[in-house]
Length: 255
Ligand SMILES: [Zn+2]
Image (cartoon, rainbow, N blue to C red):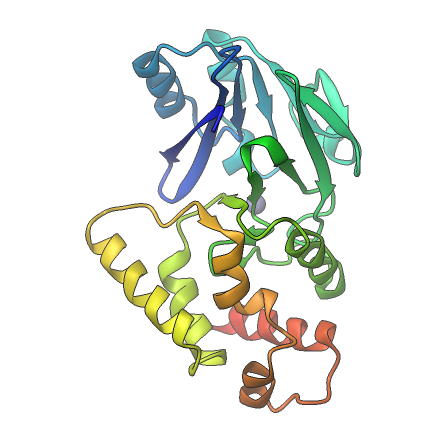
């Protein structure tokens, strides 16, 4: 793979990511929960930051920008739809746009739901997508601004990516997500075994992020509203996928 991907734990349960093009040495940072651990990692690796890609406006994804860029100047990219509540952007991104990172295509996907204007960034050559608080490991972001129908549409966009895509999401919520997932999909063998792996990883202090899209498709209830077992569990055999998704999201909110 012509890329390095580094996961950086930040704050209590956030993740930032560094994506480095090995040939050019260009480095993109995805989200800036806080400056210190990111700055330390850049120094440790001897990498020079080129770009910052922001997924959405929540403070735990952008608040480290001023401190970090004071030490590591970089171009800042984020959604045009969110520009009024993001740090000043050097490049405002629109849904469906493709921009270049060290000669590689980066596809901008609007994945509104958690917030309106939340974007995911898909780098086909690196086989990875940065989803922050849209699609998460065994979960999806809480709907602060969007509707269930919006988030389900966003999930469907992400589900169409190649199954071996690495899903880089924004938080270490996977263990509690697994406990919830088992309440709506208790008979799913892939989920049961993933849940055990997650418990072990957390016991060992190992991050459960990133994951892969194929794993999420098999185990994440927010990608599985069409699944007969989940529908039976919810008593929603004849509902639409959107309605089943909305019910799963509502139950998670109460969990
Ligand atoms: Zn958020």
